[in-house]
Image 1 (cartoon, rainbow, N blue to C red):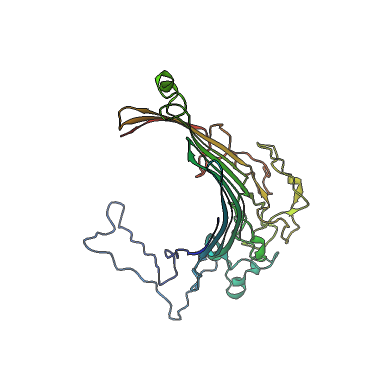
Image 2: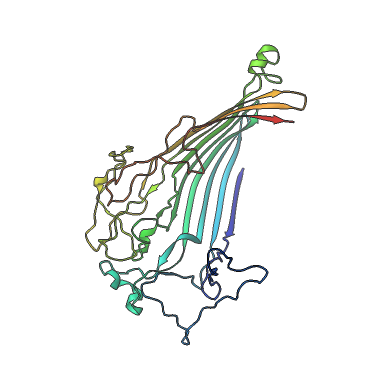
Length: 388
C-alpha cells in the first residue's frame, strides 16, 4: 500500500508586543508599600498617553537599545509532506518505509536581527548603519522569522498485539537545517548571513527505538500453567520495555567576537582540517581534537561553519513488570514495578564549545533532570492499581 499527504499549517501570530500605539505600557504605582494602587470600585485610572513632539519624530537616546516590530512582519507557516510504502508480513508484522519532510517559511524564532550591527569587520561602532545616519551606537533589534528544512527516512516494523506479544520498532535518519544561531559573543553574522545556516540545534541524525509488551504464556487462557500452584506462581505476569538510542546534538564552535571588532556579530575560529572526535568524557579529557581549530586573524571571520560537530550519544532502557490478581469476577488488583533508565547510563552535556575557554572541548557535566524525552538518573517505582 502506498500513502501520501501534504498540508500547510499557519502559525499563530504573536500579538503581545507591538509598536505604539497598538501597545503602550503604563505603570500604576501606589503611594507607599502599605496601600493599594487603586480599586475595582473606582475603576482603572486614566492611562497616560505617549507625548509625541510636534514634529512627530521621537528622538531616541543613542545609547538606548530598542526592539521594534516591523509593520510588514510576515505570517509564518509550515509545509508538511510524506509518502509511505506499507506492507503486511506474516505473523502479524507490518513494515513501513516513509519519506517525511517539512519546510518552515517565516517561522518566528527566539532570536532577533540587529539592524544596527556593524557591517564591516574591523570598523567598530563606526560601522553601525544607524551610527552613520543618526549617531546611534546601541542595538536596534527586530524579530527574526526564518526558514527551516527537515528531511528524513523513517522505517517502522510493528507486530500487532496477538498471543500476548506486541512489538514496535522504529528508526529515523533525518536532518534538520535552519538559520537560527545561538553562538555566544553576539547576535548573528549580520555581514555574511549565509554563515548562520546549518544543522538545527535540536538535530539528531539517527534515532532508534524499540518497545514491546509481552504477556507471559502462563495462567488461565494461556498455553501453560492454567490452574493450580503453577498458575498462582506464574500466571498474570506482563513485561514491558522501551529501548532508546540517539546520536548527539550539534556543537556550535564559537570564539569571542572581540578580535572581529564588528559589534553585534558573532565569530567562530578557523578549522585547519578534519576534526577527530575522541568521545572522551571528563575534566581534562578531550571530546574532540581542539588542535584542529585556531584563532582567526584580527578583523576577519573564522572558517568554521555552524553546528559542524555532534555531542555525546544517548542511550536509555525503561523496563516494567506488571502482575494482575483477580479478586472477584469484576475486580482485579495489579502490581506494577517500573524502572526508568534501568541501566543508570549517564547522559552527558555537550562539551565546552567556546574556543576562548580553558575547558574548550571537554565534557565536564552530566545532564540534570531537564529532558522531556528521557530520565537522566535511574528511577524505580512500585504501585498497586485496583480495577473494578
